[in-house]
Length: 121
Image (cartoon, rainbow, N blue to C red; front, side, top):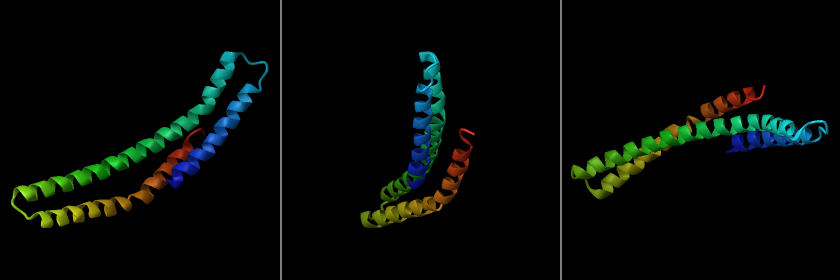
């Protein structure tokens, strides 16, 4: 996904530069350097977790819709419908799931952008 790669790639660069600056402090102890590096990593970890969570929710919703289609197809088969008719019904139902969920992507993207912009501020 373009959002994921762009936002996280940019944050990775910031994290590496921040971590490098931690190592440049010759007065810092190893523990202080380690803590500094952990602070540098925190915003990227938060961003990755946020994106992963949103994508998992989206995938779960799509999977539930597809499972509903499968259940309807199984019920049709059990009721004696012909296999070709059931396959067409299943295909139509799954296509509708995908179409419905495609419309959610812009809203999900906007939500992620807004959430990501508040991380590390």
